[in-house]
Image (cartoon, rainbow, N blue to C red; front, side):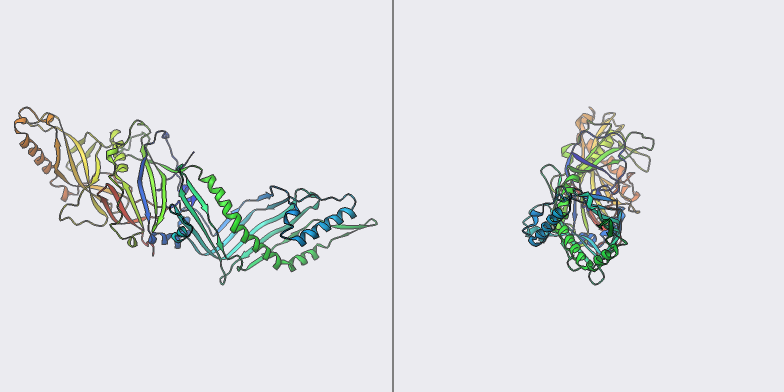
Amino acid sequence: MVRRFHTSKLLMPLLLSLHGLTAHAAPDSGPQIVNKHLLNNAVRVQVTSRGMKYFDTRLTEILGNLGIKLDEGYFPAMKYTLDKDINPDDYINSNPEAVKMYKQVREMLTQWLVGFSMNNHRPTIEIGESGYVAQFSRFGLVTDEALMRAIGKQEGAILAIELEVKSLSVSTSSVVAWDLNNEFLGKAGFENVTINAGDKATPLKIRLPFYLRMNAYGGLDFEALDLENNFHEVPLALSYQKLIIPTFAVEINGKKFYLNNKEVDKLFNAQAPMILEQIRKNLGEFASKQLPAMLNEKAKEFLGGSLEQVQDMAPPGKEEDDRRPDLKWGLKLQNINLKKSLNIDLTAYVEDPVNGQSAPVKSHGSRGVPSLNLVPQENFDIGLSLDRALINRILQLSFERRNFEQIRQSDGSVLKLTAPPLIDYVKTPAGVVLKPTETFVKMRVSVENKPGSMFLKDTVIIDFDIIAKLRQLSDKSGMQLALYTIDTDSMYLDDKYISFAGRLFKGKVREGVKDELRKKSAGWKTKDEVIPGSLPLPPEILGIKLDINRVSMDPNGHLVMYLDYAKTGAK
């Protein structure tokens, strides 16, 4: 089964909390895609050590961007019943004296009180509506490569949630317990209970590491590891408004003598330190044993299939009155590993709901893995690479819709395309100094032309490379292509387009075509000729805006972006 998440943000680290996948959900309208043409490793994300510091120090702010508030919370009422009876003999080895005393009292009551009998116990605990208020002095997410080495993990990644709470107050309307197998004993508990933990001198500290790896079925395995805490030393305080206890009475010759509940309350208050120590012990055992097991079980339910994000995308060149459904593009988590940096590989696809037969062309993709070594890791926060296969697939589907079949220029002339344009790497032209937010790409185009020459047919198709500058818009809302020049050496003209007269001078005919292309692009460098529309890059990650530190097209055909967190970055 595939888990589908509909969101307007890129799927990014991690998934940072599992909740993060749906935090920016948007309706996924229109028909669904059945046949997905997957582009493996089309998107790669590298979160450097510097980048992870942001999540170490500002995770609360990030989760706030996702609509998650951590400093207070509410829990509905809940009830829990043990799944099997408690047999006192199960505890005879660990608490022999207590079991012995229990059996003596139980036997005495059975013998001395006519009709009295007691079954093995099956406790039920009911907790009313509850809430908490916390003052965090630290809440962060960190990577732990040292722990990976210590436990012998060679793949995947270990992350850890670290929190420090200088004040935690947990309150509930009631805590009531009774014995399901001996209901005549009545109910016992408290009303309006509050437990306070931690202070400035000794804050509550918890560290929960968890291991993530991709499995053979395309899903994400989650394993909560040993939780570290300081429950044994954190100050605790317990208060309640009312003690709930069963009614006890002794009847002598028709006269009843009731148990003084006020004295019971005094006795309980006197024993409060011992009770708090038992609560402290139980919390520690729960945190170290039951909690990791519960998290692992919940993770199995949530991560039962591959993690997938789907969203709508307007095809480049779409007109305002075009009522066809938008393209669908999706990301699927493919791999995650931790080696000096947190690396996430994503499979991508782009499909047209009204053109299900269209398939990507393999040769339109990259020629190897991306290179993210142009900028030292200590100088940027996040590296993002996009395979040209993904960009070219978008252009292909837009062209097939006839949305992007011409390039209009400011002088009114038009380049009519007969095939989808193809983006690829090109060297920066000699003598050109680029800004960090700019890079050059080449765009292979096939253009239909009516030359009006006796040496050429009435209509010809000319193939050539447009050299364009991919640059960030001034408002940082995306990146656009600015036409720079035409590489006339890349021009190809099939002989079939040369007329009978021109075949005597093929070389000169082709040189004449090149001259015309040079004239066509002569003013591009100075006129700031741009292709309308833009690519929505860089994306937001978990609600965090990003600034471009450096952008480049690598020789293998990947658009590589070195990114910093907007304004502040990770200090």
